[in-house]
Structure formats: C-alpha cells, structure tokens
Image (cartoon, rainbow over all chains, first blue to last red; front, side, top):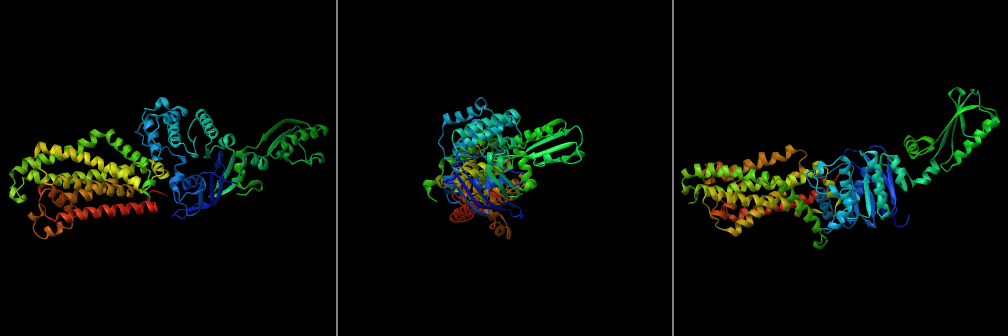
Length: 315
Length: 260
C-alpha cells in the first residue's frame, strides 16, 4: 500500500502478567477509509488502539502515522489523531461545552467558539451545551465523547466500540454521522462487536483474535472469497441417496433424506444461480419439494467461521 | 525538549479546567480550611496564647508565633490534597485517556496540574492570613521572602501531591499520607512550640523531621528568627522540589501507573 496514513509493523504487546495482547500485528490503513476491526472480547482491539494513541507502551514493533514514527514524533502525531474510547470517561460534573472546549485546548488548538458550536450541532448536542454531563442519557454522553474527539479536527479518528450500549435508532444515527465524517475526509478506524455495523459502514475489515490479525481485506473481497449461499429444500418424499443428476452441485442430504442442503457460491451471486439450476434439476427429475429456504452468509457468519477455523480459513 | 515545542495551550487547558473544578466547589474548598485554622487561632492564639510568656517565643506573642506553623499546616495539606486529587480523579474515572493521548508531556502536565494545585492552596493561604488578622496581631518581617517561600512550599507539596495521586490506587491511599504522615509531622515540627522548649533527646529527634525546617523557614520570614539557619530551610525545600520533579520525570518516562 502506498503512503498509508497508518503503518503498523510487527506490533507486539506483552503485559507484565505474561498475557500476550498483541503478537506481531502488521496493518496499513489507507487515507480516507473506514476500517472496521472485528474481534471477540480480549482479542487485542483496544490494545491496538491504545498502542497507536499513546495509552500504553508496545513491547515491540513500530507504528508510523502520517509518515512519522509515533514514538519519536508523538507531539506532531497526536495533534492529528482523535480517540473515542469504549468507556464513558469524563468529569461528570462539568458542562458539555466546557468539556469539549477543554479537549480542544488539550490538543493545542486555540479557542474557537464557532467550531465548538459546529461540532455540538452536528451531534445534536447544541441544546444540551450548558447541561452537566451527568444529567445526560447514556447515548448523549457517548455523543459528548465523540464531540470531544472531534473538537481538534483529527485526520485519523479511532472509535472503540462507538455504539456499544446505545439503542438501535441512535446507532443508525451515529452510523450516519460516521459516514459524514468519512465524507469530510477523516480516516476512521473503528472496533465493534456489531458485525452489522462493519458490514454497513466499513470499506475494509480486519479480524483479530488472540492478538493476531487473521484477515484484512476489502469488505467486498471478503464476501467474494468467503461468502456462501445456503439453501434448505424440504422434500415431500425422503430420498435414500443423492440422485446422479444432483451430483454436480455442492449438496448433501440431511434429516433422514427429507432435506436437501445446498452450501456454495462465492458471495457474487453464483450461489443463487446454482440454486435456480438445482431447482430445475429437481423438477426435471420429478423430485417433489414443499419448501425452499435460502440464506446468504453475512459478515457475521464469516467472522464466526474465521474464529472457529471452519471452511479452511485460518484461525 | 524545545520550549517552543511545548503545548502551552494544553497546559493552560489543564490549568483552567482544574481551577474551574475548584471554583465549582469553592464554598467547601475554602470554608473548611479557613474554619479549621480559625479554630486553632481562637483556641491556641487568643485563649491559651494570651497566658503564654512572649519571651519563650523570641519576644513575639504566642498567637503571632503560631501563624507560620498553621499557615504551613494548611499549605502542606491543601497543596498535597489538591494535586493528588487532581491527577487521581481522571485516573479513577478513566478520563486520563485524554491526557495520555493528547500532545502534552511532563512540562505541560506539571504546569497544568501542579500549577493549579499550588494556585488553589495559595488562594486559601491568603484567605487564612487575612482571617488570622481577626484573631492575632502579627506582622511579616520579610514579606518578599515570605511570598517567595510560600510559593516554593506550595509548588513543592503540589509536586509531592501529584506523585501521591499517581501512586494511589484507591481513595484510602489518597488520604493516608496527608493524615498519617504530613499532619503529625507538621504538629511535631514546631507549629505550636519552639524546639528549644523540648528536652533532649526530643530536641535532637525533632531535627530529623523535615517539616520542622519548613516551618522554621516560614517563621523566619514572619518573625525574623528561627530555630535553624534560614539557608538550610530554603535549601531543603528547593531540594525537595528538584527531587519531586525528577520522580515525576521518571514516572512519565516509564509510564508507571499511567500507561499500560
């Protein structure tokens, strides 16, 4: 990848307890993309973000952001990075606008009331600007966290579980806001448990488990490589064996011969075409069926397969 | 480190944020130490002090004699608790992430947190000095030295408080050192008496108490006389400042208790 905005090489982090949180992670992030980092609890997602943002010290490896070594040029680099951590963490007794102004100052930016207003309005916080943070709902508090991170106009924004614990409506609202940030040129790296979130927003997806990146690719490419289409065809009369005419298709008999199960395709539509051909073959072969249930594998299915090492994908 | 590369806006943001926290609770922050110290002045300065022989205290009234000691008691406890609370709270709430991910280093952190803590304790010290005038007739022999020394002590113990706030992993530890170490050392360091009034070996033992030198340094600026050479008191306080800054620099370099 040419001129990545973030270039992580062989990054490792082992805690004093001996826990290996990151084990030789290589990751390059393109300017302007939304990158979703998926992984179960304890996979190393937050540690990876913490290492880039300066919250912890890596045991090994290098991190370059904007072409600068993060360890050596931390002042220049940090001014251009924003972080929304997983936990709601601020002075709960402070006012919303003061908290956002404080964050802007911390990153070395001069006071700018117009910019603060713009950020607060974009997150629907303007009406709450004089409210104490503790008086806000959980979703509004999370918006304040995002407003704080945006107050210094970062070029690279880390969102660690940005929609954890927020309701569906607010989650979709946040997706729109994250999309708007990307449109404005901000590069976004987000971790999430909601795979739907990655599927909805991300340009590229990385799957991490036990401190190792299992997969990094374009979302569409992942779906093409690992996507599957499944069909369950309920037969009216059980079959004792698979007919010759169906041998060319990736099908199996299940449920005592009462169900024909197709599992194939590549995420590009091939699966649906094959199912149509399969149905024609059943009709031509006078094999009666009463029900067809088709299902395209989602990123979630792929994610679970990856973690469980199924279908020959590495785990 | 290049001074020009310092994030002074960052330092100012921390400083003003810390002061804002102080002014949000200004009533409790000021009233409590002022009330406590006023009670000392009433009981020891006005009531008991009127029965004491000034010749035992270098010719000054007992009330005037205890002013520097009581001021030191307030300075030590307020500076330490303000600074320790200031850095401990973001650690406790998790808001420390913002400090760690921002372009602020040791210098900006110290200007912000320690500067604000020292500033708060100086405000309280000034109010206490004014309050003392209601109960005790005192004067300041060396006002310039007095101001300089008070600022130095406030800075020293704000630095110490910052270290305490980084070290503490619970509210209990935050209060242990001020309650169980600083307050006893201040009481035993000659706040209410001159060590010349003690018999041996206690007079010698008292000289191992570092707070004894602080109180006597301040007492010299108020009364012009003290139990120890003033240069020693100033030197020890400056040495303590340097030691605390060195410890804080190591904390930031290693990330101890701050970065994982």
